[in-house]
Length: 267
Image 1 (tube, helix red, strand yellow):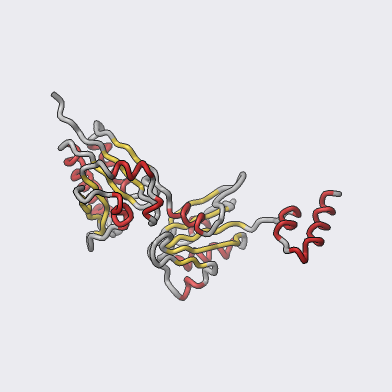
Image 2 (cartoon, helix red, strand yellow):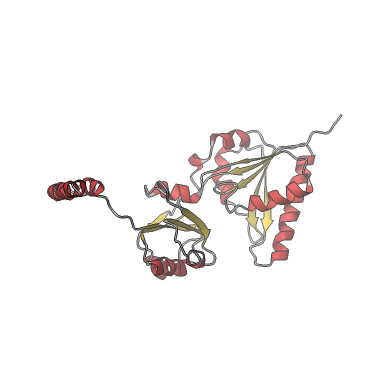
């Protein structure tokens, strides 16, 4: 008789608000045997666990996996491999396992690195990755701003290298999201200003969490370094059509807007 092997579930728990975790994730958390989450080698704190905690039974084992916050590539890769082995051992014992990650399971996720090692070392293991709401989706909803419309493009990039990624594009995208913007926010602001294309820029820290901050003047970040959980959304300036002008202008100026619309339609 073949020994049962557990299933691995990579669960994106959303950006911070426990109510934004998906129903499928909640159902899985109610029945897995072990929950894993990433933590720094310096402490055992996990935002992902805090988000999911209301949905995890008290009897479920929660284990922190240590990942070093370092630029040493060799040390980082060794931690991915070691933590993959720890997870595989639980799966081989017949336990269903969840690996929690903030936001979406496939967007800038520690789970993604561990996943590669598990697939390479134990290709026979059944894996299911559960998507979650990303920080930038939640941020756009928070400020009631569409991320992308019509035929527009959207660049989602890490802000670790500042604004260099935006500078590399000869044809600038209409919409840009800088994640991990906390460290090089000044250079990100400079890159946005250099293009002279963008308006409606907004910075959001700790979206959906206690202490959330929304900054519409990004220059405020120059004097006050933002929180680790900070992203920036920048949108290109758009030409307002006569019809949009008609709806945006207040009643005292409605006749003027109608005149603009009438003139444009007669051309």
